[in-house]
Figure (cartoon, rainbow, N blue to C red):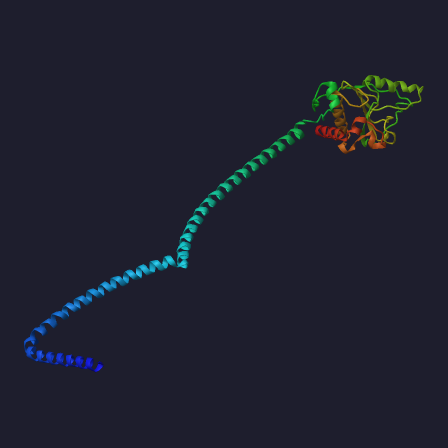
Length: 333
């Protein structure tokens, strides 16, 4: 059966072949010319078609490339990071420039504030220096504060908070009431030299200058066996009584009797605090003696400085007040 099929197929094939060959021979001459024209026309059409296809393919390829690059950019984390990082860097740069401007502004403001503070401080210092200089001129030139400062208890008792300053041109109210020459209060012996001034307090509260002068005068009889005197006594009201000449010995300062002048001042109570008037006269008298005998303030002594006796009591207990007294005397020189 297979052979029968093959034979049939073979017959068909041969038959078709014979028919095609005979047909081609009969129509070959008739179709030769038109086929050449059709082939020429088909070639031009084909070239235009190919060109269109090529352009279409190029456009398609471009779209694919654009889409691929876009999709790859979207899908690639590194590219996104790069784009984000570039944007972030630009924002950072803009922020830094803005921060830099703000910082510069703040720095300028801070510098202006510091300059204002320093200017105010310098101005304050200059004012203080000027005030100190003015105060120095007032103290040293015009003698302000040369009366010293009263303690609190003296303010309370006298009702005065300041001491009136002694005027340099003021005449001292000195009363010369010399003691009678005698063994116990005025020996009449000349001083070896005048090397200092010694300040004492009476030690007899409430007694004035006249009462104390009379007490020294009464020692001349020797009934009490007491030796004592001084060159000057300054009273509670500022009165000054001279008991012994400056060039004679007075019995007041033990081993320094032979080369010093002694001044005693009166006081109201056991504290040894003096009145305003007493202080003024004491300052002026001491300054006068320093001038008369060419003495410096270093040669003004307390009785305490000679033999440690607590005299004058107030100046021993309050050394600052003694320094004020020395300063007041110096301002009068």
